[in-house]
Image 1: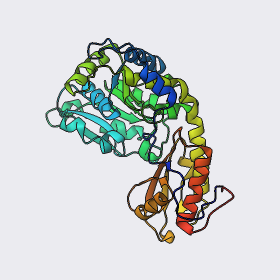
Image 2: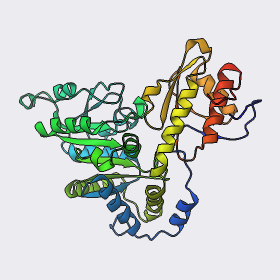
Image 3: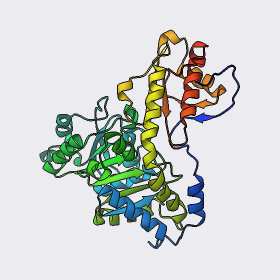
Image 4: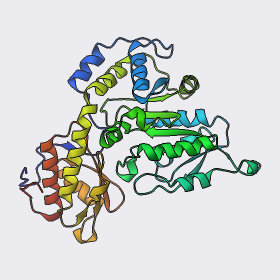
Length: 365
């Protein structure tokens, strides 16, 4: 364990999110040498390559590069719910519902029918089915057209949805003539954690949004995938939303490197997250549900006995160079990524120990 003797920032360990990574040298070289053209005209070769590769990985017909995951989810929902006043069933603790500025309602006129997320990120199948509107009530109710899932589930601590669960939801969707969209911002994390190929995890879905700048560590963008007809409609919506860009091959080149080099690093990210979670549970005043640490995200509960708050502990950790995000008054979020080393994880644990108890743990546990 790296010993922390005083409040001096000797290094920075940025655990705020996996979105804070910097482009690797390999990415920078690829970006500098990227073959580009105008993507609005559909001619950027690097973008076309990335879209085809992501479609292949996910087992879908086609893909579309978009600037962000929020836009990817928004476009996907709007394509499936192409009549204003349509309704989507989604988790009450989902990213689309909480963190995307209500875009599906404000821009698309789509009504959210929220159903309670379980602690593991799932939604009870019977609750999903019960939330589907009776077509005979169309005079009064919005028309249900879509179900959305999230895998891995961020607000549940990066929990993974199994193939079996996802396919059961897909069966419900088909039974009622609905579509299924998966917010797969960290679908590669889920794939690695479960030991299941991405295409198998999303086989039941009609569309998937995959983030390039989270677990994969690319600088910008997401790719949405689905059928050829879905992507054709999505491309038009992307232009409407201002997401059609020109020489995006510069960005896509970095994403292609991320697919080649960083997927294999995700398992290490998960191991370091579990190492820190186990160590934090040994610190009096902190609590982590280690059974929920399946991927690269940790939620840390601050107990009253610690005599501190999330805001204060976050500030104290920052004095040591450890950056985390407070989530309310008594919870912190930590996210690992490929630019956090084993030594960084050990140093972070030592800093937590000192910040909470005033003592440094030299044994690493």
